[in-house]
Amino acid sequence: MPEYSAKQPPKMEPTHPGAILRLDVLPALNLTVSEAARQLGVSRQMLHSILAERSAVSPEMAVRLGRFCGNGAGFWLRMQTAHDLWHAERKLRDEIRKIPEHAAA
Image (cartoon, rainbow, N blue to C red):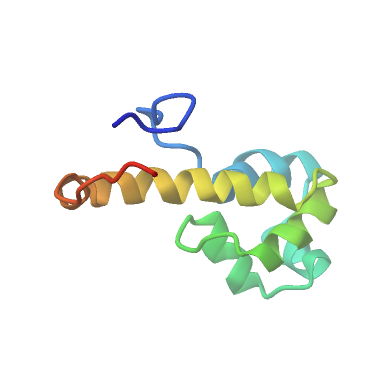
């Protein structure tokens, strides 16, 4: 049975949102991690964990980042979801192949 997605999953790992913040956003704004965390209303440790790609962007953090960057929460959540889904599909690939597919009636 074919999948319902419009395209195949990307072969390259989607970028973690923390990398965008670390490499593009903070340098462009000339902000330190501490100052960005203060403006976002979160701890420096929390922001650093995202920047280091050890933590995911939660919906609450996405709302904060969407306001901070002016591009909306959905942008950050979609980026995190793409990253997480890419990793989950690869981690579970062999196990998922064992699950039978069922057609809708």
